[in-house]
Structures are given as structure tokens and as C-alpha cells.
Amino acid sequence: MRKNNILIFSALIITIGTGCTKTLELEPVSSISTASFWKSEDDANGALRGMYIRLRSVTATNLYLWGESRSQNLKQSLGNDFSNLRLYNNTLDPTVAGPDWSSVYRVINDVNLILKYLPNISFKTEADKNRSLAEAYAMRAYCYFIMAKTWGDLPLVTEPTEGYNPDVIYRERTSVAAIFTQIKSDIAQGLSLFSDNSFTAGRNRWSKPALNALKGDVFLWTAKKLNGGNEDLTAALSALNDVDAADVQLLSDFGRIFDYDNKGNKEILMANNFLLNETGSTFMQNMYIDAYPPNSDPAAVAIIGAVGGANYWTLTDDTRQKFKAEDLRRTATYTELYSYDEATSAYTKFYGCIQRKFDGMINAGARTFIDDVVLYRYADVLLMKAEAQNALDQDPSDAMNKIRKRAFGSNFSGNEFVSGSKEDNNNAILEERLLEFLYEGKYWWDILRFDKAAELIPYFQSNPTDTYKYLWPLSLSILSTEPKANQNPGYQ
Image (cartoon, rainbow, N blue to C red; front, side, top):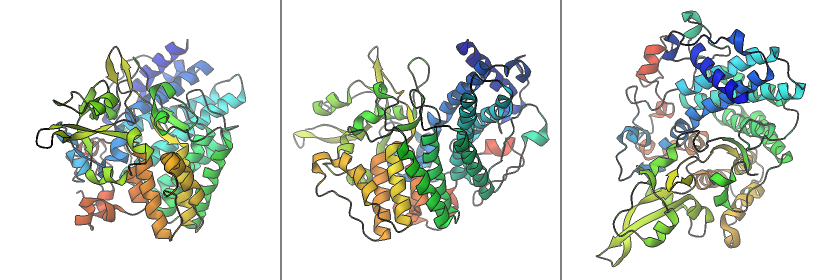
């Protein structure tokens, strides 16, 4: 029954609309209607599962590109992936604008349908009904947060698109301040509806602890980017402290956080689920390897194992050099591959870096990149807490050293964090986020939140006045299908 409902709902959401995208102009291809679907608790659960399935179209590739690719942690490797050169070179324009917002608005439309129709459905318990609504509010807040950080002003859509009325489909962009007002309202609604700090199995659905992590993230952003000041910093810190009431912890083994056979572990707060024979690969396949070069270092080959994907993107030298040799995160995050060099009679010819965090699993001898995409984990809570504490003139040492103790293990002595000036602490916290969350789609937004683009990113070092590029351009496709949506300043 549940499987059938998921299939029915998938057909429904394709038929009734996908948010602010050109697919709204298509004629219906199914006779399924909202009137025939929204009847039972099973229907509601199918809709919720459809919402999370739709999120995969955001997290499989786009989330990483929006959240990290422009930070210039990575560069072109030996493989040809020229479509993304504009991203890490920060030379986007409306013609080559990167992934647009269509995939996110599709998820938002799923949410809006749920929030409209689910309240009229009878559930076995009111707590289950409230939790379902809370998950939808959390999802909408998260989706708008992603887009507000990426494009600024946005079309604000809080009702489902169920027809073809241009007055409903086409909307002007709402100010980013008003978007964040909506985000904060959705977060408050969600938190009021969750009855406890429990997680669903797999930790791949929104929960109260995950929503508190999102709240901390949102209020840190508005404190620093929208003049929220100490009031928002205090709200962020309070939400992050509330996460400690849940069943969460740092795993002792950093490398085990992301493994396919360890999904939903106690460090995870929220992840988007990928499964064998159900989903395609994530973007992480572009940072692995499809074939070993001749005379590869056998020690590295033993670590990397079965090939898969392609080696299109590799780490910059600057990023590699930030990892200390004794930092256990280094070997759990990437492996450097060298081949034999006759001139040195050693394995010294550098081939590239192979990412190891999200190396998927082996099925019938083939590597498949279907590790969950982690949206929030407890380490993120600790480092956001350190950031808020430092901004409020509090000592961030405890949170920072919890991260470093795991990172350095028996070599922690000599690698402790010692609080200094506010600026020194900010620099240390930001770098710690790079080392902790490499490949997790966060560092570009981290750099913007700390206001360090002109200092850390080569393009903005050379072009410090191009601050308009902190926002992404709207693509020509979006401009052609959204006649009321004006281009971001600087890209006209």
C-alpha cells in the first residue's frame, strides 16, 4: 500500500506543478487529482516520502556546487569537465550560470501541497500528524535558506501550484529580508510541532535536533549578513545548545561517519538518503578515478580500491597543505595518488587527489557512489557554537577542542585550540570548518558568512570590487520562463 502511494504521489507532483519552472506550462498527462489523493494517513506519508525523494535532485549534485565549488578548494584534474570550470574560477554569467533554482522549487511545491492538504487528513495520533507538518515546515525553511544564500531575493511561494494561471505562476522576487522572515517563521512553526528530540530510523527525515541545527545556521547568517547582531547570535547559540538534549555525539572514528554501512549513526542529525538500486550516484563520483595510471603507487592503490566515477576535480595545493600530517581527517578525506618516476626512482609523479569521504560501496565489483548526503551532523553544531560564542565575546575553546581531540587523537597535545583575539579565533574556526567539512558542500557559504572572500579566494583577491559575484546569476533559462524575475545586479 505504501509503495503504491509513493508511486501515485510521484505521478501527482509531476502532473500538478513543479514550482517556478517552465514545466508548469505542460498539459496534464495523468487523471490523478488532489481530490482523489489526499484521503488517508497513508496518502500523507506517501507525500512526505515523495518530498524527500524529490530532495535528492537537489543534494545529488547541486547542493555541493552551490555550497562549495566556488570556494576554490578544488581545481580541474586530468579529466575533462569543462562545464564546471566557470564555477571554481568564479566567472559565471547568465549564459553559464550553474544549476538554477528549479530543483529546489519542486521540493517547495511538494511542501506547499502537504501544508495545504495534510491538516484535513485524520491520523491515528495527533503527534504523528504534527510531526509530519513539522517536517514539511523544516524542509521549506531549509530550501529557502539554500536559495537565499545563493541568489538573494527570491520569488516567495507558499501555496502549491495547481493550475496554469499566469498570475499565480509568475511572481516577482521578494526581498531577501522578507525571505528570511518566512524562513524563521517556518522554523518556529516546525519547532512548535515536534513533540520531542527523537529521530526516525536512518536519521534521514527532519527532526527537532536537526531543525535546531538549521535554526543555528540561519540565525548565524542573519546575525552576520543581515544586521541581526547579538540578538540573532544569542538565538543561534540557544538553538545549538538545545541540540545537546538529543541522542547525538561525535563518532570516535572520523572516517566511519560517512560509510554506506553506517548510515544514520549518532553523529548524523539530518541526511538525504541514497540507496542501491533506488538512486543514482552523487556528484562525489567526479572526484574519484576511472582507471589507474601506469605504475601507480601500490600503497595508494590498496587504499583507493576498486575504481569508479572519474577524476575530473582534484584538490588545490593550498587546500592539501592545510592538513597537518598528524590530522586523522586527512587520510579519511582524500588519498594522494602518485605514479613511478624514473628520474627519481620513486613514486613521486603526482596524479591527483582521490576523495575518500563519500566513496560509496562495491556492488558486483563496481563502485557506486550512494553514500547519504549529510546536511547536518553534530560536528557542525559544535563549530557553529564556537562561531556564535566568539562573536558574542565568549570563549569558544571547549567546542573547538572537542573537534580537535578527535581530529588529532593521541597527537592532540600540541594541537590544542587556545583562544586569542576575536579575529584570530574567527580565522581558526573558519579553517577548522574547511578541514572538518571538505566535500560536504559548506565552505563557500562559510567564507561568505565570515566575510573572507576577498582574503581567501584568488579571483576576489584580484577583483575585490566584484562583490556582486557573491550572489549567483540567474540563468537565461530562468529569465525566459520567469518574466517577472529580474537579473541580479552586475550580471545584466
